[in-house]
Image (cartoon, rainbow, N blue to C red; front, side, top):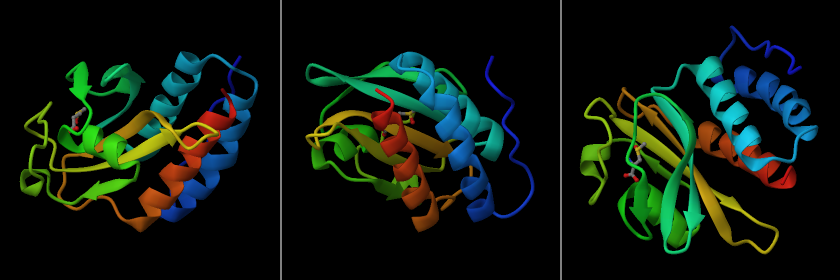
Length: 160
Ligand code: SME
């Protein structure tokens, strides 16, 4: 039985700091990718109340929707399209403070205002998926989110 996550109060940095080791132990006992992505999405949603948090996985030349928390979302994204497809093509984290200012942004919800997308990389450095987090507030993500979400993505890859 998974333990309850105990992350509340404190600033964003403190919450990530508390969440990381809990997530590490939650994921460590499980090798199923969908199970771990699902729990990571739930843990992030519960801890930060993000508008949408979830994963897309690379399938051939597209990203396909994986486990997520939040409103229904588009299921397939071509390489180089939208924020997710661009993060995949460029193999780097993208922080988008205003989604309306990002050319080609794919609006799964009109309520989404800012977004961060972090690639999931295998040991060879190839992208096998992305973590996408959306906020209903402008400029909700910064370097702290980027650094901490990258650590979470590394954790997810280690558990494969
Ligand atoms: N906005 C993303 C699409 C995915 S949804 O936000 C869940 C993009 O532009 O790639």
